[in-house]
Length: 435
Ligand SMILES: *[C@@H]1O[C@H](CO)[C@@H](O)[C@H](O)[C@H]1NC(C)=O
Ligand SMILES: *[C@@H]1O[C@H](CO)[C@@H](O)[C@H](O)[C@H]1NC(C)=O
Ligand SMILES: *[C@@H]1O[C@H](CO)[C@@H](O)[C@H](O)[C@H]1NC(C)=O
Ligand SMILES: *[C@@H]1O[C@H](CO)[C@@H](O)[C@H](O)[C@H]1NC(C)=O
Ligand SMILES: *[C@@H]1O[C@H](CO)[C@@H](O)[C@H](O)[C@H]1NC(C)=O
Image 1 (cartoon, rainbow, N blue to C red):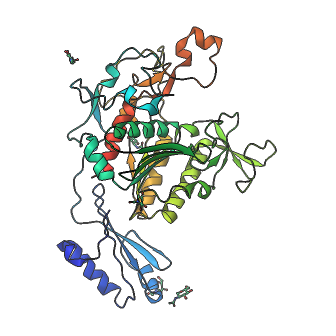
Image 2 (image 1 turned 180 degrees about the vertical axis):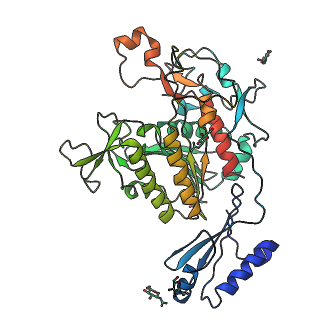
Image 3 (image 1 turned 120 degrees about the vertical axis):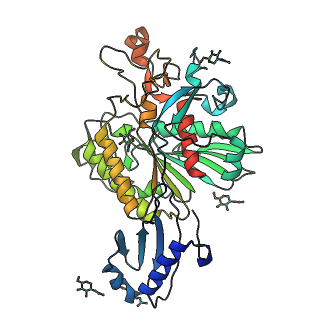
C-alpha cells in the first residue's frame, strides 16, 4: 500500500478525478489523499478529510459507493479499465519431484515437534510431499526464501484463528526460518494464546493468536478447549483484538468451530465473568446465524480499528475435512494420492452456506473501503485427501479401545502434515503480500 500526496505521480485519469474532487469540494480546509492500488478489483480509494460545511454536500452527491462518516469520507472510484486478473485458486495439482518440494525438511524445523511432524510419528509414504499447485491459465511467484525474507524486513505477520491457522503459521515459520540468519526468539505469551517467532536482525515477527471463533468463546484457552457446550459472546472481540492492531499483515480464519448444530450466545458481559458458568443466561442459536453475527462483529472491528494504509488483511477460506470420502468409502486414513479429477471435483462436506456468508461479509467490507483478500483454498484442499496427519501425530487424549483396534477411527482428517499442503497456502498468501 502506498501513501501518495504528490499529484505529479498520478496518471492522467487520476488527474481528472482529482481535479473533479477539488472542484467539487472547493474550499476545503484540509485535504489528504491516500491512494490504494488494489490490482484484484481495480478500485482506488481516496480518503478526504472534510470541514463541517462540506459534509452535507457530499452526503447528497451522485457518486456510487460513497459513504459519509462524520467528517471523513471514503470515495471508491472504479477506473475505466479493470485489469484482467487470473484466479489463482482455480487449478489442479501436478506431481513435481524435481526437488522444489518439499520446501523444507521436517527434521530441520524444530517447531514441528508435536502435531504436524507426520514422518516423525511414523508416516512411511512420501509422495504427498511432491505436489505443485498449478492455477489454470497463469502462474504465481514460486517461493524463494531469501527474497521473501528481505522483503518482509521490519514487518509483523499475525495469524489469528483456530488450529488450522496454527497449522499454517507453523508452515510459514518452517518455510522462512532456514533463510533467516541471526538470532531468533520463539515463545508463548498471554497464557499460551499468543505464539511468537522473531528474527531479531531482520526485525521480522511471525505470530499466531489463538481465537478459534474470533469473538470470545469458552474455547479461548488453547490447552483446555474441549467442551460439551459451546458458549460465545457474539459481540465481544475488542479485548482480544487489541493484541492484533499493530501487525502489518493480519491473516484470519474461522470456519470449523462453527460446524455444530447450535451455539449458545451468552448474555454475560465483561471478560471477568466466566463463559463456563453453567448458570449463565444464554440464547440458543443455529450456528449459521451465529457465524454470520460473529463475522459481522469482526468486520465492524476491522472497519473501525484497522488502518488499511498500514495493515494488509487476509481471510483464509474453508479447508476440507476428509472424514468421509464418499459412499462406502473410509476416510483420509491410508490415502496416498490426491484427487486428480480437476475442475469437477467437489467434496460434499464443505458447507456452501458458510462460504456464502463469508463471501458476502468480505464483499460488504470491500464496498466500505476495507479490502480483505480471501485466500480461497477450499477446492485446492478438497483434492488433497492424502495430505492429512491421520494417525501420524501426537494425541492429546488417550485412544479408546475401539480406536486402537481401528486406526482409521482415530485418524485426524482435518489437520495437515508439514511439510505439506499448508506450504502451498503460504506460497499463495505470499504472492499477495509481496505483489
Ligand atoms: C463540527 O461539527 C461537530 C458536531 O457536528 C462539532 O462538534 C465541531 O465542533 C464542529 N467543528 C467545527 C470546526 O465547526
Ligand atoms: C440534500 O438532500 C436533501 C433531500 O434530498 C435536502 O433536503 C438537503 O437540503 C440537501 N442538502 C444539501 C446540502 O444540498
Ligand atoms: C519422478 O517421478 C517420475 C514419475 O512421475 C519417475 O519416473 C521418476 O523416477 C521420479 N524421479 C525421482 C528423482 O524420484
Ligand atoms: C521493528 O518492526 C516494528 C513493526 O513490526 C516497528 O514498530 C519497529 O520500529 C521496528 N524496529 C526496528 C529497530 O526497526
Ligand atoms: C471459494 O471457491 C469455491 C470454488 O472453488 C467457491 O465455491 C466458494 O464460494 C469460494 N468462496 C469462499 C468464500 O470460499
